[in-house]
Image 1 (cartoon, helix red, strand yellow):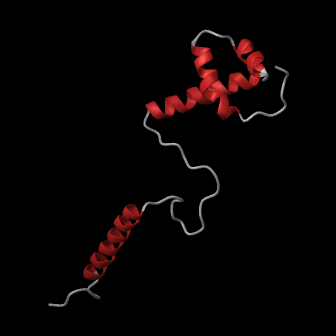
Image 2 (tube, one colour):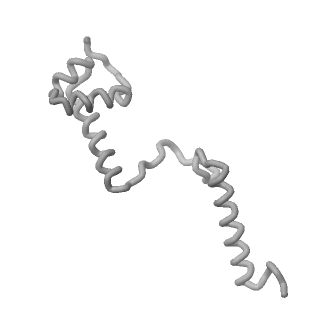
Image 3 (tube, one colour):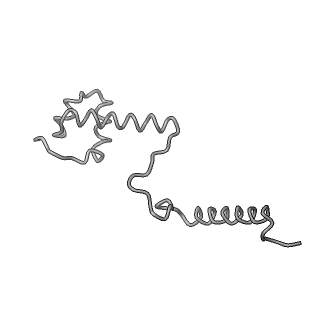
Length: 105
């Protein structure tokens, strides 16, 4: 294969990792896919870093800019309902403590 200028390397990541585990060198993997040796090296470094973070229990952060309304991008209806109920309960407790509202006895 000839060298390519740009490749979406995440598509090839599983194959690169499996070849590396099979004992292939960075140079052999790079020649097979038409990549630079440094691209293969960085791909494997990113993969190992993600594996270490997952083993430590660290959740990956969502990519991109946060939403303006402050909500997570793909919140299920059940999760949103749970969040709203919790907010409602917190507001009731606050009003009850401040003696401004809620149920009067």
